[in-house]
Image (cartoon, rainbow, N blue to C red; front, side):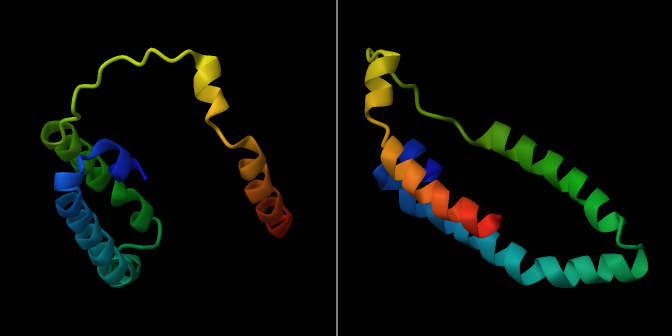
Length: 101
């Protein structure tokens, strides 16, 4: 949803391709790498080793991803809230909450 909101339609396919590569890499390599780290360094390192990866990800995202400039919205907060489907949100959250409880 964030991608479809921020990226223009012409470039969306490229960014979705990047996201699919990252997702597939994480899905296929995450468990084996985590198992190797847990076997040789201990399970606690599986959490600690993520910190440098997160920092690198934030740096790359900050340096490479530039959001397009948007003109300020002239809508009031009340007009923006009118567009939200609160009944649909409650209908979606209520059964999910029941399943979780």
